[in-house]
Image (cartoon, rainbow, N blue to C red; front, side, top):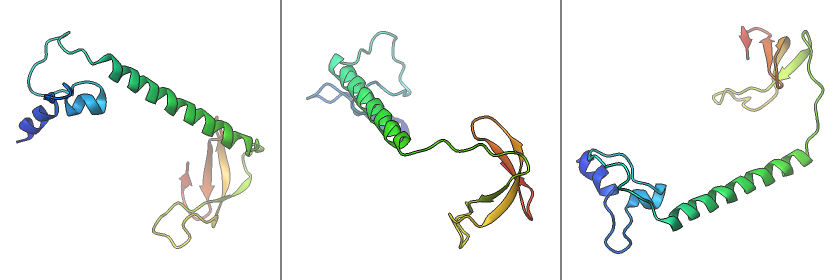
Length: 125
């Protein structure tokens, strides 16, 4: 049953000449029937559509990054031994997403990476 379903996803439609896999992914997906190299050539308009979607997505991501960066500020780096508040990330906790834990910076890494020793617990990255 699984092999038949997988093969159906690669079977071209009589009207469009495209399989469901070609419509979704722009190519045939791997199945149990061997495909000779060079036999499958996706349509040019499908490749162009996929490229234009990728370009639009890239532009949207860059616009969002610029928008977020315009409302942010550079924070002062933390130092070893500094006391900090830590946000509770335990979803089962009543204090989820609240700044209820305290700790001390024990190690400073690159790109705002800090190792914090929480009071009453072992170290957490």
